[in-house]
Length: 118
Image (cartoon, rainbow, N blue to C red; front, side, top):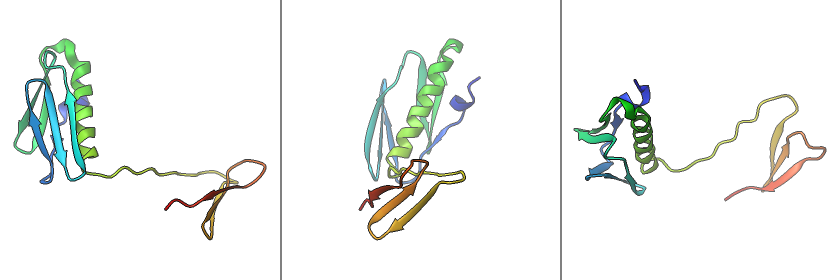
């Protein structure tokens, strides 16, 4: 069985989900997203404040987990702003902020300088 597919997708109080025949629409504070799922392979239903995905036949387990993951990412996308983080590990790597410049020592023969983003 799919461990991913079994887990329900939690909706917080700011998020609304609308499920039609083969489309799910998720609305949140940051926008609205739509997804056309395979209604002939999985069943998507809303139970209170969760969304539950179940396969219609045992052969459709791949779409079960995939559909649940896409819906969970949609719920996350309308609630949390996009962010990018960088983790630097190792000896010899260093990052410094000098005024409005970011100075990177990341293994090149010279230091890399970049303008700080706004």
